[in-house]
Image (cartoon, rainbow, N blue to C red; front, side, top):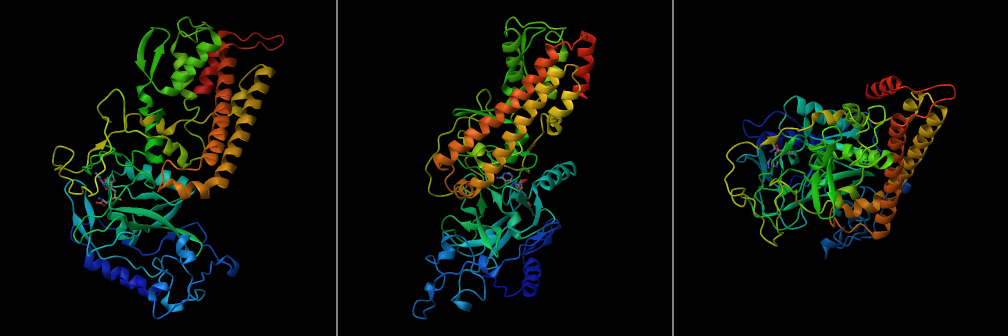
Length: 500
Ligand SMILES: C[S@@+](CC[C@H](N)C(=O)[O-])C[C@H]1O[C@@H](n2cnc3c(N)ncnc32)[C@H](O)[C@@H]1O
């Protein structure tokens, strides 16, 4: 174990242990053993905020000094030096003291570099902290896109909490080399250290020396390009972090009962040709809404040529994400995806979860072939969608000639804002409960919390849909302003402005 007593020593040690550890050929990064935050103030803990446990050091029972029954350990909070009744004997300062397990970097087949256990690690042991730069979710999005554009194949951004991420791309601990497995021997756990949340990698089971360490990226990984998972586990999710929010946001995954789809798989009928073609679900849903409002799917009402021409499709594209880009992110939508089935292709073949006690981390079995090359990066199919627009109802309202239409759209916008705020507030309120359950027991968020969340989410979605519907309705079925006729040319102009 490495034990670092203060920051300076830690830093020296971290550099030293890196020199010992880094084999030739490992791409350059700055090794750190403490998160670094740029543009985010380090939390100052007041005495009142410091949790003090009730442990007492007894030389006859050294394990009593902040062992597993310590109140702080039970709440995943590290004791604060100077406050812990066990003083220097306190064993609950593992993050602070960098009490990491011995590990070794090695070159994998097909998955870049990986990390091995350099000693036997016991189930529950702290392996290493995942350190990096603490960045906001906005910054995470930007950096992730920039890294992808720079052609960086490996993604190192993981989520810290709802608002912050840890980016270990340029600066990080060696935890950044731990690869993903769908049947992992490690897991991430969040601990509070000096009032700040930190992410540690912990052993899920006894790990023999020389075994590759791996955890499941699904919960914290921000993702990058879609990467074919080469873990070889029988329950492999096929793509890295396929259940992560980043992946689902990127791929617009939709869930229906036990089936999972990407939105590409939803057929949309082109009213002009009456031929099925694949379009995004959101377009399809709006198309259906339109048909319901202004006719029906088989016999759409034709207003000023909108339903007949591409305008209709363009219009649905600008209002392309009634639900997806909700400002609030939370684990519930992630948890909602239960199966690994993608119906119409073999990409997500149906699998049976096998209860296998030994992890299969050889990566040479299970998937049928031995991966020889670097992981396959699946190209983005719809890069245009990454820059999708969020409709601003107030701006759109100004484009309508009719006062009635303007008022209706503004009212819808207000309702949407209100629903979004309620959802945000609710998320803040229930976050501790969600975070507690999100990782270890995916399906076990308390029902009361889930119900509240679902209700608020539905209200938000409905408000979102109402807004989009109101815009479409007023474009397609314009209400003439007093003494004014909205001509089809004006309608066309309006649509173009909306699209721009
Ligand atoms: C956090 S890094 C892990 C360290 C990385 N292997 C390296 O060489 O730096 C995550 C990246 O490793 C690769 N990776 C990790 N687990 C993988 C897996 N099971 N299958 C394929 N590639 C994997 C992917 O390129 C992913 O973006």
